[in-house]
Length: 361
Length: 205
Image 1 (cartoon, helix red, strand yellow):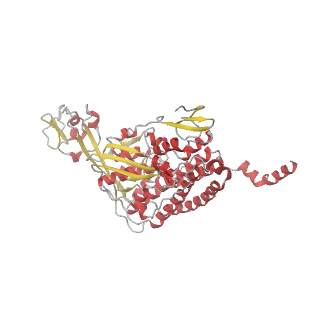
Image 2: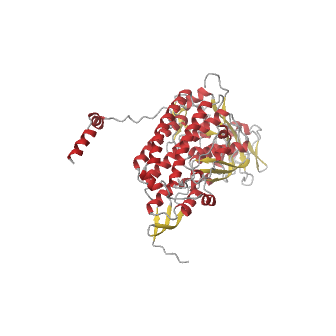
Image 3: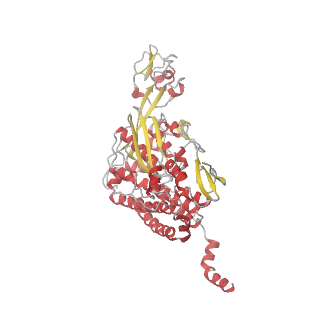
């Protein structure tokens, strides 16, 4: 069948709206998109190859550097996979502290994703408010772990340091402040008439299409699929975690799901701080030989590590499956098809929160 | 037009705002005390245990060098990733970074080390370079020859009938000199780390 294409529009790899390099090749009829393809491979690191032959204390730091925005979850999933191989049990206090670090990381990641959406639809005021809020979350992460991004907090058998009581009180106070501000900002987003014009009904990903494309994370939850790996995690199950989802399937729903999840994370951290059990934070344990597959919920969806280790606990084989690739494919083949203008292409692409660093690792 | 100008002036030309605009100072940028920076010496004497080098995940970030009469760890800042593992590994508290050292003392946390010698016999040619290069071997058997042969049973490893034999693995200090001297890359030192904490006293949490 012959297809009439007016113009081929390449977006990226360098584009002011994209956080990371990727190329979107759109075929447009007038300004309406009829087909699109994504081109990756601008920042391949080969980090899985570097990890081979190294013990956990080196791979842990490499795993964090797979992705700069969601580094804690990479650390957590890798270490918990090693614990599953070696049969190490985690002290309850350490398990709760892991959840606190992970949820703080999820908060900053979601706030950054929502910032870049607001920036893309040219609502820079709200974007900067959100970025300012993210900075406060980063400060809390720094107080807990000692570093803002590459925290290196989780080790086999526990965590590296405890949270002293004055710090826990400061974290509580900071959470109250963040929640108050976030209520205002999410209200601004939910009720802004111009934001609604740019977001509601744009970039529709129906539930059937989402199932077909195997999307994960907030993108799936905004299409009404309540899929979340945290429901299988023992500590989260203990905390009574229930995933949030919205049935609207558009850009607006994807951003609002992230706002909802930040509120949910605040609630989880508060619950952890009040229920924090007493006891040790490191149980000890040596990494052993074995093979496993372990999944955890990254801010963008399901993150899976396949690991094979030798008798000294060194990594022989490792494969990382990151969430963004499914979301990027779904975005190109489902969401932006039929977009009414080129301006909606970038905002729809950003609303799926693509993380190219994860995807190309 | 004129009215709106008056309204704007009344609304926005407030004295305190103008004062703030002209004279407000942002707080100076300060590194918080809990920030995990580059490791710095605390002034304690280095005992040449080398655990900092063994724990370091970044290649070539830390080395222990001669300083006057004794030894001192030297940090290469371009390679250091500021993970703080060297601070945790040092048994004598020579290095400090952020508040890791105080936290460790308060909570009784530490890292336990053990070293295992892993030799790939497919790659090993039995040249004996590793046995000769090993500083512990040299201390035990000063007569060890170029082929790695030794009649002393106390050495870590020696060459017997053309094959390398590891006798006392527990004496290995994990210095990795053998790794560097091996022409085929057959010998690797597995550094096994374990996070450990003494039981917590009541009242600290």
